[in-house]
Image (cartoon, rainbow, N blue to C red; front, side):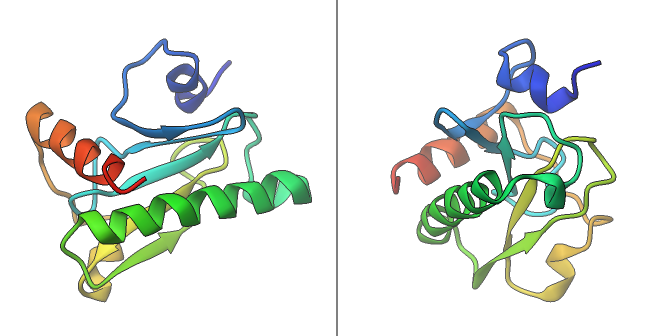
Length: 129
């Protein structure tokens, strides 16, 4: 059965897409730790990040860096935290989380945003890509 991320990649589920190329997609997490929390996902459905072949792994990291650089310029934060956990969806992905303190990385902290707020965040980040 396809993962929720594969369904997003295939356009079966809507998302707040920031960037997409032939191999990767970046979109806002709909249950974010902080404003701008973004997921970078390879389009190839592989469960664990260290099961990616070297080319796909390095590509994902380079793609994530590009997105994180734009996020840092667009959002009010001290840095962009990076997390790879892998329990919530069985499809490799990188969390890019705008942070001002270590607690912003904790996954029990969540921010509620409206559709309009999500769209504004996407547009802010895209303006730096």
